[in-house]
Length: 433
Image 1 (cartoon, helix red, strand yellow):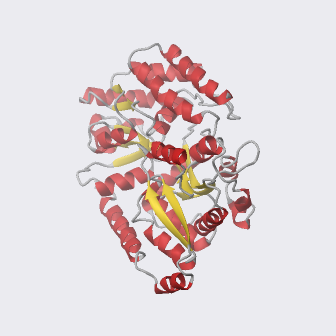
Image 2 (cartoon, rainbow, N blue to C red):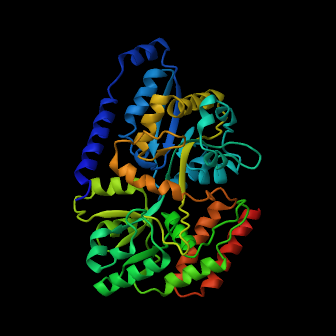
Image 3 (cartoon, rainbow, N blue to C red):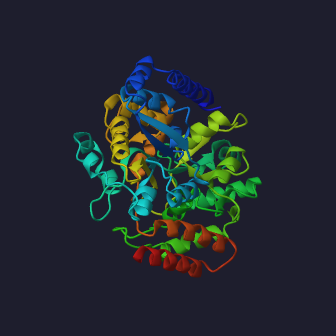
């Protein structure tokens, strides 16, 4: 099967290197002893950002930091997207929030930053190393007052994927542009029909049991008829546009498209990997690495795809991830956390390792970082389709919840125009507060 053994070998090498990094460093132990055990203790909580969501994968990075900065000790806690938000909110309420957290601007800036909980990282952005960060990334990391709540580490472009074997067997492969990894809205309609005729009752699902993987359903709806999710200035939500209504009506009335109120993106990925559905909307390069390596029963060729569009102008949802610091009132811990951020994002060798661990792309131009990686080269085709990073719009947390509730209502048969208006009213009310 495509790439399976190569990916398994690559992951094995990463884990081996990580385990080697766990060995105690004598120099560090001596320095700790000389310091009287007074090293600054800071905590890092990380959402599952590629390989950074695996404590074993990042252990060598943490060990290297401890070796070079024995006066700072970092403990690591890995969060899940299913429960992570609740865990962080509980910690904020009881005063036990971590010093460092790794996630995206939608949480660090538009949520916790907007609530005044994050340290302003403008001084990090004044470092010379930040000059090479893409302007589009920089804009997504600060608020309208110029305060930075995040310093970026890596980025990716989310996409979808299809089961190539099923598509070929059903005669649906003809609707795929193999070179560009794109297709039209009509191609998508025709492919679903062909797979239905082939005997698949559920070709794909619109999962709406929660916000997990919601970047996929948003991109699907917005691309089908060139709709948008917010205005260009990220001040309000526009999902109730005629284009988006048309897209949702198409999906709601298509045989082979199933709205599933009890499933989230991770459930869809599992169904896709088990061969029960022919395509997945919740996808990116790390999904393929993770599924191919961890699913021994995966026996079909995964082909990553852009979302279908009516005009050929693909706008894919981007992901930006970086470090933020919760303002816990301890200046020594804050400075130690900034030292950690600089180490992982500014020092060339460590930054390269940090990005490679994520299995995503750097936030600055480093064209050779994946020069010998066929899988990453294949997925790099989607970078040109990167759309607007609108996840920093005010009221984002409310909008995400309102989105999946709206999808659930559509799936239950509610009038689409009425459902999306209710979504827009709720989201825009939150944005205006």
